[in-house]
Length: 133
Length: 133
DNA sequence: TATTTAATAAGAATAATTCTAATGAGGTAA
DNA sequence: TTACCTCATTAGAATTATTCTTATTAAATA
Image (cartoon, rainbow over all chains, first blue to last red):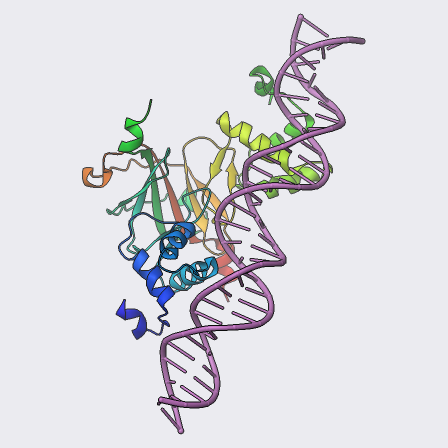
């Protein structure tokens, strides 16, 4: 957290609350999830502040914006390259830590310069498997 | 196209226009892209019709909804399992036809039953590479 | 050709996100 | 410290994508 002061991020209580909420968070929360969580301690918290802070953190590469959930953006404080496993029923997202070295045939490259990859695995989580009447 | 009549899809001129627009389309169009394209021939075309038709096709597995573009849904008439290459600058999406057999370590599975995967490759397309002042 | 049933159109409603403008509070330098 | 400057916060309006509603219309079929 202290690192932020060092590199010039103005440390307001609201930002600290958002950073606290994100720190080590493995839930891949949406802006609304974060808003709800920090609102408990900051009843005047504004959605704009959540979005502004996420935007700032994104620019600093301290958070990733995930385009996995078709309904809303999710955010991930884990900026190490990794992949995701999504429950097709409840939308729970879980991390996958290994890295895949995936070759793309020249035919498919179409002149693109490839700079990275991200794998989405689809599945059914244990909880949904059980309640699968 | 005839197949649709066979399996009970009511073939309206609007749907034919939307199916024509999708057929063989490699642009991964958004609902708006489709709306604009078919509006030329059907000035009274409604957005609701585009969304309704896409929903119907989705249910019939005749089109895929892509969650790749953070701003909007994209649709893909190619329902064969395949992967995508996205230009991080202009958002152009290109298909990758090979399939990857990706193992997930038990540690990362967390009890999920995995049913599929989708790889997003990030890169820079030839056009953007050139105009890269 | 009449009937049934589902599709269409227009616009209202909703949800996520971004924008705006006024106010407020960190950080910094005297 | 104190004053100032800059940037953050807030509330709400605006925007954008998508879904919903309802009356109307048209496709399929007997």
